[in-house]
Amino acid sequence: MSILPEAHAAETLLGIDFGRQRIGVAVGSLLTGRAQPLGTVTNKGEEPDWNKLGDYVREWQPGRIIVGLPGALDGSETDMSARARTFANQLAARFQRPVELVDEQLSSAAAHAQLREARSAGLRRKRLRRGDLDPVAAQLILETWLNEYRRNGPADCAG
Image: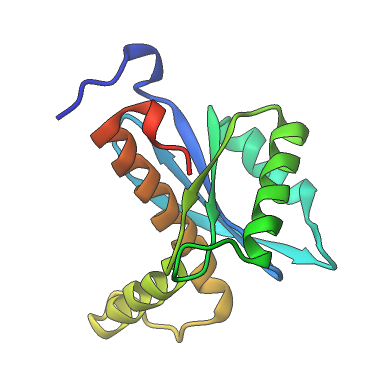
């Protein structure tokens, strides 16, 4: 178990699952090492809803933002990798927060499996909708980063 520096122990983080139509948002904490889904932001016409993203930043005051970096199964960059990098740079410039990238390979598939399992266990009653996946994928992305942070410290978390 690693001991976190006191100044950063309670740092709040936002996790982002960037997509062409929707952006999932989650919140987490260095203190607890856990994250929870928050909601979805539209991304229509290649222009995210910056106002809604700004609402999340103002409400949660994250110390940093973690953005999932998609890639091909062989680890190579894709068109979505480049889009996610551009989006991460825009986030950093717009909200004046450090933004880090983390490998998010298969996070949407894992989110779908998690939601399906919760539904079959009776923890979710409604049918799954496309927008349900994005915040859970953001949660998984953020938890991936948090796990790396706890294992390796801050220097080895960036993707």
